[in-house]
Image 1: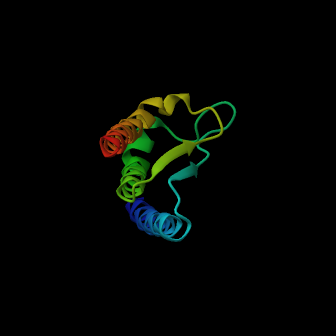
Image 2 (image 1 turned 120 degrees about the horizontal axis):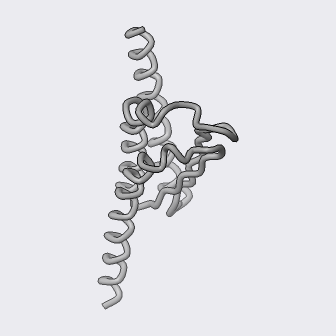
Image 3 (image 1 turned 90 degrees about the vertical axis):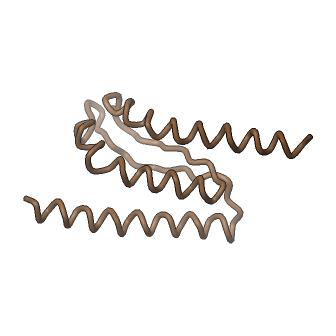
Length: 114
């Protein structure tokens, strides 16, 4: 079982690296100011995995992606189909990161106007 965990970690590391490079290309060549992230995490009845599993396995990768997006000066939005109500607390962790950067960006833009 431990082997599967390490294989999943390696896969998610590589996938996250790819997404981060893709965002950099979107910013550099297409002047993107926002990334809309689609990652369906639930069926009509329930999430595909528990909130604890999300925190343990997926949240670190989502944090890396969110931080990289903000480091490029872009906003990020997450869309997930399905019943993901049990993950609201996990999304709030990411939202805190997003809101902090949004306020920072807004205040920098406002300061530039005066």
